[in-house]
Amino acid sequence: MIKICSTEDVPKGTAVSADVDGVQIAVVHGEDDVFYAVRDECSHAAVALSEGEVEGCTLECWLHGSRFDLRTGEPTGLPATEPVPVYPVEVRDGEIYVSMTPSNGVTR
Image 1 (cartoon, rainbow, N blue to C red):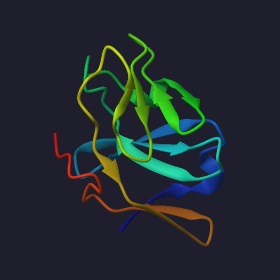
Image 2: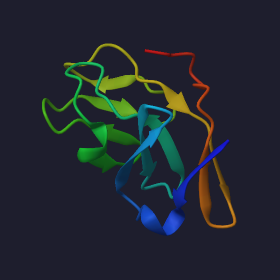
Image 3: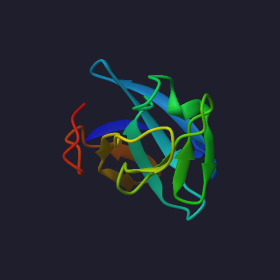
């Protein structure tokens, strides 16, 4: 697990981008008060998902409106049809840690 940031750096309903060994990830504080991590790149248009809107347990791409389930990485709204990698998150002592082995098996 790699330490990314403090929980205070990611207010509820927001996302931040982090570079982990050359891979951009989006750390998201879902509206369910759970922290998630996904590849910070829309599978449809290759733009930063961290700049999109958090709604419930989904993250919406700001460019074309594709939505992704933060728990599974699966697209829940077109035009995206391919999932994004989802990374396991642990919160310890107010710090967010992420494993860079995708939990959903997506490596793209």
